[in-house]
Amino acid sequence: MSFWDRIAGIYDIAQAANRKVQKQMAQQTAALIPEGAKVLDTAAGTGVLSFAAAEKAAEVVCTDLSTPMLDKAKAKAEKLGIDNISFEARNIFDLSDEDETYDVTMAGNVLHLLTNPEGAVKELCRVTKRGGIMILPTFMLGKKNYLVELYKTIGFDPSTNYTPQKYRRMLEGCSCGPVKAKLIKGIIP
Image 1 (cartoon, rainbow, N blue to C red):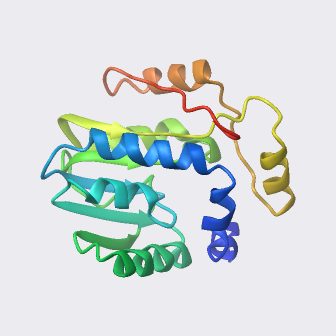
Image 2: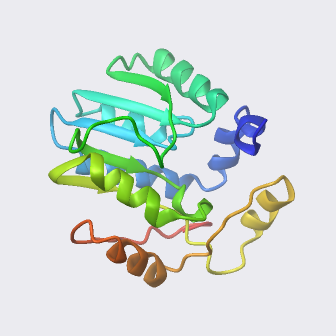
Image 3: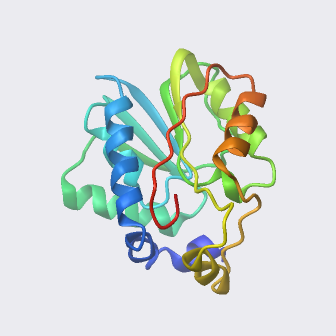
């Protein structure tokens, strides 16, 4: 059982500690989704970005490697009455979709956890339509933070401690198109 499977039941409670950032991230995601878009959300956890995208999207595919996380997301979607979302266990590095399938692809708060974030970005780029949008928020762990240190005591293991500048350079190095970035300030920016 993975770390993410083990914490699925408390994931939303843990995320509430960084509520301001989570709320702004969801609002900004919703604002970026074109009306009627086909959206892929990878490493979706319990679905925060999927639900934000569902406000305007025609279809959202909510994916994660953790089945318990997807079960939580599905239950939340049912409770909220969101019916334009499907749920699938998928690997961000090996998506089964054909090239240029989605208007929007997303990977929220996962790239800092990966040893090969560039590989994930390039796979998302592959399935994003030409002229489409990739939404890739991730936590900036460049400075010591008490909440991150607490997460580490229960098994959280980030691979990269991004600063905004380092993150931008990584994204630009993937050569997927222009990079626009905004820092959302909070406990974990």
